[in-house]
Image 1 (cartoon, one colour):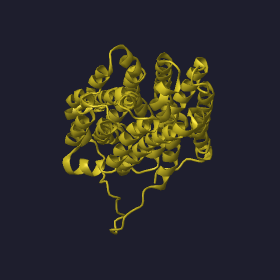
Image 2 (cartoon, rainbow, N blue to C red; image 1 turned 180 degrees about the vertical axis):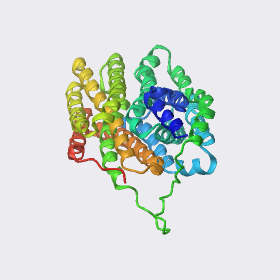
Image 3 (cartoon, rainbow, N blue to C red; image 1 turned 60 degrees about the vertical axis):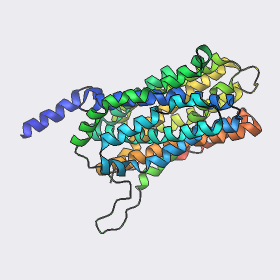
Image 4 (cartoon, helix red, strand yellow; image 1 turned 90 degrees about the horizontal axis):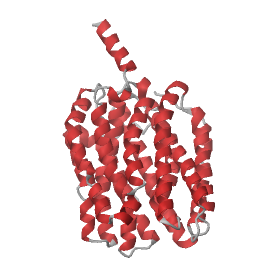
Length: 404
């Protein structure tokens, strides 16, 4: 029996991480879910603009999406414990993909915001379940590589759909993008396999309410989660702003398409590659450089779009690439930091907190940069985002917290 256990552990160490039991289902439904999410992320704000909203109103579209996501995420562990992972995740994919075609009924802001809220609830379920599942089905020593594979399942559809969204609108119309927004419904076919993997893992699901310490008292949220969440807030504020407003930042659509493609490709490559390196060397050597890259990318972007009538395209593309590298790398590293700061039975909590930080940053970036741009213009708004980024550098250089 002991030899069998050792052999099983050795096999799980040698296998490619994406082939480990449960990972194909996790990666499949993640790719489908994020495909529908990515397709609408830059297009839904444009739809609101077409319906009569201003820059601040269009910024509210993704802000409401993220706000609904965050509100939902805190309840997901408790819902999973009560109803099971598969039913909860199936509901989430339905909420995320089902409303997409309903955009065609109206372009008015209130209707777009309503659909964004419903989709945000579904996205909240998908994000918490997905990242928690990766932590549950993969040994801790391979979490970096697993998060890299999970990030690739997120990034590949983003590369294909996020960057092409505005081009597809120009070429075929909004209806095609809204049709692509229903792709999360295809992910439902992977839900049974996901549920089996979740149920067979050896980590108990954690309720959404704070756990107790054995004496009936509530235990505080692990303090080690605060540091990665703040760093994540800053980089996703930057990424969320650029993704939301790329079509409005530049003077012609192809520049936005190219910039979004570079941002998503560099983010995917970095998120994939940095995971294995972090498994070997830890996260600390990489955090500071990625924070500096975020700041540099935002400053360069501000200069590139200083003239609204004539974008400095080469500089804009470089800025989007630099920000993309940091955007992907810090996603991986902050999730690793979050998982390393908690016990195994708190992975669901760490996943929920990390996802809240990610989506809060995206939503804040959308509404803050949109509001500032409406009064001051995009260059100054981007410089504010750069200031927020560099303020997190001391956190990036601090020593890592250890799992209790």
